[in-house]
Length: 581
Image (cartoon, rainbow, N blue to C red; front, side):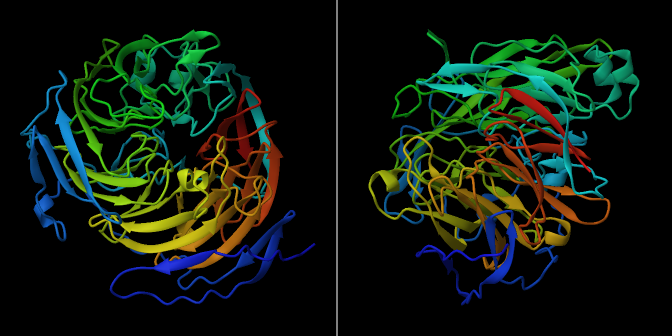
């Protein structure tokens, strides 16, 4: 059955820059995904990526950036520069591990990344969205002929009561990690002889709400090592050391368990001993955090530069942490060690009211970008923590930015939610944007009306998905609470222009970030979960579902996939291994 629902007023596309684009969107009926209405626009360059350039790891001199000016020294080791998109300045201070302000930061440390494909040599999905560009939430190639989803295995997990609410299973962002370990690492971790001998063995490592880290076989869900038991819940996504070291980095999202209350910590786990070996405290005297004061969660998924042995982790306390890990791994001896030394950066703006970062950072060369609770996108130098630019985005921005450097120039795709604009009853739209990573300029902007809900925000909470293969001209946004408070919109936009290729009204809103699985037939297959507990397999060319399968309750977490196997946990308090066939 086919039908068209009138579009809500106010949905609009803006284009920016010296050569502003005048785009007239012609919308026609395409198809229905079940009862979900889909409308189509046009695709000027179907299947053609903006470019094919591969960036090697190297540092970029800030003086080479377009329009770069050195920051103003304000005294007391504080520096400042003008905000983009708003009046006033952003000011920042760097601190050493003793919380002393640092006037002259060491500029010799060579912290940098290349294109996302250069992040690690270990097969799998080792951090949120797979790499430093946040562009690879799946790995490998799937044999897909039937276009079906089937549950291969499940593993029961728990729940926790905290912060006046109940948190079952896994939540936002809650992506599992999938790792095809080197053989010597498997031996060092004392995995079973069968798993060590199996060249196709992939391990699922999954920190979840109940505070435990689960270790399972991707093939059948069997336990590979006993779970690492913790008391305080994980809400975000962990990271595996990209060198193949048996180290897990995971941020704590909750510090309550029933009537018990504990400290805020970022955790480092030794996966040989299967225990925590180091922490970074989220209760930090240099934090400016407000609303609530003292909040010290870590929802961000860390990035590690394997060459410089450096981890970068933004915190919900508003601090960007740079950790020299001092990590070493001796596979023959079966030992791994880590002893982080911290450098920190905090910042202030006239717009800031919370001072917290929930998004994960994207990185290219020595530049990093993250968005924050106060609606800012901040770009900083990973070596010195100098802020290069900061742009006001208009509202709370928790969605992780996705980076495309296929032209040799970094661009970020991002969006915001309806947070404090909604509470003030004004401008209730989600702004989806492409931003120039070097200058902070807005390339294009597409707006979607979204509902305000104090408890469950409308707008973009999921992470944008960069197209690949036959849809490499597109970028996908999964936006919540758009056409109605319980509904959402999945929209595919042209990467170059922001023009709509197709837009689908989703019956049940979603915070789950969509992924693409590459088929051996040359086609791409989209997957996302929704708040009704459905996992969707869809055609990214049209938005139409091939099939869905129920995972029992809200799929708020983001999926990861390796070849034909998809893994995600739902509010049904289960981890699911799902085969696409």
